Length: 320
Ligand SMILES: [Zn+2]
Image (cartoon, rainbow, N blue to C red; front, side):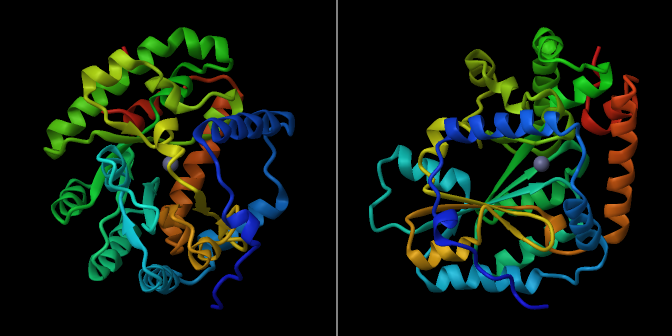
């Protein structure tokens, strides 16, 4: 399969602060709501093709990382950039490519990506949901010098469990969501033996429908302090360090807002690239299960039926 064609440089080097990102995502959410939650035919077709028919693109992934290294980039984790900044050690000449993985599904492809990076000596960031936790892989990543973190979604989990539909209902239930987050993170730390001080908010269809995101859970300084959380991946203090942000997406576009190679070739100082295993190899069975679950959850939610199964999938501790 041919490699994807780089899109415009302006897209690729777009600078975004956390605040603007949040604002954009809120706009996206309201837009999503206005469109009556209907996914476009084009997007659906892209997802169907990408989930089932596209051959593995892991060789493209490997060549992309090799290309960045060849152009003088240090491919690193979120903690690496954060700690360099805290110590005042980011120089204008630095070329850093922060590589973040959100392991939403497909642990086997996540492991393949990790093997590629390990062979290249890359120490990146991986965030695992409760339903994708792989203790051995998380420990391997940390032992190699990378970072394993928690990809949290308690706000969406509780909203689905209780059938919450409005921002007001969510805000009233926020203490319960924070308790669940605290409980899940604490148990995950015990289970893995890892510090998990870096966390990243997951984006669920429920977040987009309600227009309120999981990171709202961490708009609570005492909770952060109590849990010794160093950073949430969308924190403004971190996001303003990144000059160009890119995320993989489904066939045929593959990158949004544009191909990070444009930024790399332009020599942008600090680039963040967010990747998901699903976009790099079509694991048909995993995708079928995930898509079926998504349809089932969407139906329950649309019909206002509390989703009891989500408690088993989205939490270590059941919501009281
Ligand atoms: Zn996610």
